[in-house]
Each structure stands twice: as structure tokens, then as C-alpha cells.
Image (cartoon, rainbow, N blue to C red; front, side, top):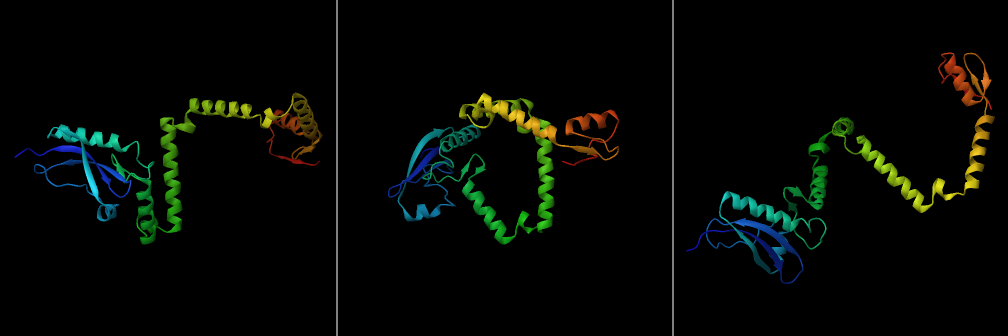
Length: 223
């Protein structure tokens, strides 16, 4: 009589190319075990399954932990990418397919988030959004990371330059012409200070109002 084993395994099927990776800790030596299918149980019911033991581990707590780590490494390359892989979990993560199904069920049964009124849902979204922004800002994640912003700006600029679009898609002569046209258009506009009645172009009016402590929003365009 041998000792019980801990091992990783792979299940395949004679009739179809689906497969499944798993880990098992025997309760008694050489016990019959062909995986623990839940989501895809029909595969085991309809087709002829075969099991291949991939690796044995010490029958200890450390061996069990090591076996679970190896199982994750086996599943990870195929998880959520290979349509023939039947694993719906990888190291505690749940597949996108299962998440969608659970979300649909919760919506139909009005559970959790979907049990709230539309007004409360919006309030929760705003609260969670503020919390996410606060966490990202504290940790310097993505948008709040100055280095990341600078890096993304450089990438975007280089990409636009490579494609020859936008500013990089016109000639030097066209740039000069556009600059003159833009300046001419701006200078030809007339704006009036609503406090003093002074009339000039937008730029001069801004300097005029700032010098006199007048709110620069107190203006109107007259031509």
C-alpha cells in the first residue's frame, strides 16, 4: 500500500481538443480523481476524458503550496487567451467569461449593485470614482505620475511626427501662412471692457484690465 500523493495534472478528451489543468491532494493512495468540473461539467459528461499526471510533490504543507504555484504557471499562458482551455480560475482570479455571466445573473435577479435605485447607483459611481482618483493621486499612478505624463506626451508627439499628420503634415510655407492668418484674425476682433467701455483686441484688453485690477471676464466681443 503506497502513500497518498500531491500532483499537478492535465485532462484531455479523445473527441475534442479541449483541455484542463489542475492540482490534487489525495486523501488515500491512488484514489480515482478526474478533476472537479463545475462550469464545464458537460465536457466530462459527454466526452472521454484522460488524465496525465505532470509532476509529483512532497506530501507536506510546503509541497501543497508549491503544487498550487506550479498549477498557476501551467494555466497562465493559456488563461483567457486559448479557447480550448477550460480553466476558469488562475491563482484566485476568475475568468472574464465567468465575470460576465455573474454580472448578467446579478442584473436579472437585482442583486448587489443592481438592487440599488438608479439614483443610488449614480451616487455610488461618483463616490467610487472619487476614491479611485484619490488612490491614484496618492500613489502617483498613471495620469498623476508626472514622468508617465511626460513619457506619453513624447510618444504621442513622435508618433504624430512619424505619420506626418497635424502640424507635421503641412509645409513650412503653410505654417507661416496659417500663423499670419491666425494672428490677423485675432487682432481684427474687437472686444469691449464692460466696466470702462474701452475697446481694443483681445490681447490688449487683457493687459489693460489686469493693469487696472479689472476681472478679465468682464468683456464682450463687438466685432
